[in-house]
Length: 418
Image 1 (spheres, one colour):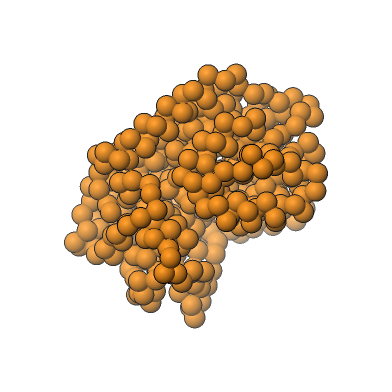
Image 2 (cartoon, helix red, strand yellow; image 1 turned 90 degrees about the vertical axis):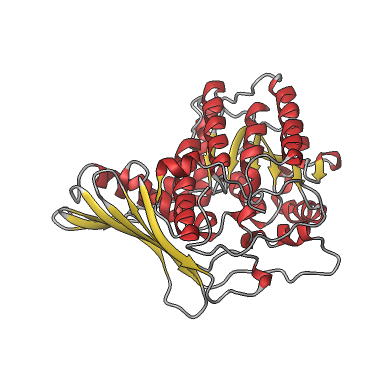
């Protein structure tokens, strides 16, 4: 499955998508002011997509959902049923419900003026590009890509969004959480001096898995278990641990320059769990020599910790709300549910005519995670430039419900960097 970007079917698919996006781009860009209605088109109707819609509705008045799209038709039907609880905020007509691999294009072609992208991460670069070219504001979940070509697409879409006055906010809710915002502002003001080291982790037990049914093709089985396939999720260091790596980059005001590490598939070895690893341990090195240590694990029965810790020349800090040392401090204020706050901030920025644009920061945090995965899969040191320039993609050659081989489990020392 892993190959370069030369697949003819993939090129044809992207060419068709780009053509549709170009036609959409001819539409006048939408702008909001005051109490103008935010009309949401949801692309990706699973649990997170439905949750994001409800978060957006709770965030502000004048927000309605008007279109639904997903590869799987049953997910669209589920969203129709579940989102009825939104009452008169749910204004989706039957003709604005779409399924199939082109459902995103059909949602974007409706009169929605904001889209929520909550499909598996693989699809987000192409969906973001189409949405921005279609003149839509965007909320998209993290991570925003699974490989470097996708990261580069997201950066380019972010630049186009800035040019066209469109907003992009991503599901890195810590960036909108008051305790994190206030703590990291103090760190940037020197509360613990020069930051020389740190640790980030997302160590937890196992997650859901849908046992394969005989009637499912390879493609459908993988889509229904997208967590376990690198082409769809990026592996859990990218899909989940990106939250903590994003905090690391935020604290350091930039991205690391090198990554070294290890990982493997020690416990979750059954083929039902695809081919991803169940643990990673990565050392990241920044300009100036600061080193941060990253770990993520999805194994039952282990000691778990999810969080971040920064070490400075004059103290240490938990970016979630506490600082130790001469400038000791603890956050004591109130804060809104960060899953709502990120939508509050996006909608307010759109209505103020100053839309937020988080594309580059989340693209760089996503690439930070990809760089760590590359180091663990290969057993080699990986530089930022190597990761950014990589042409490796885990995408399938075509998007159809049919056969789709599972790539071999990566083997450090044998799996090559490309």
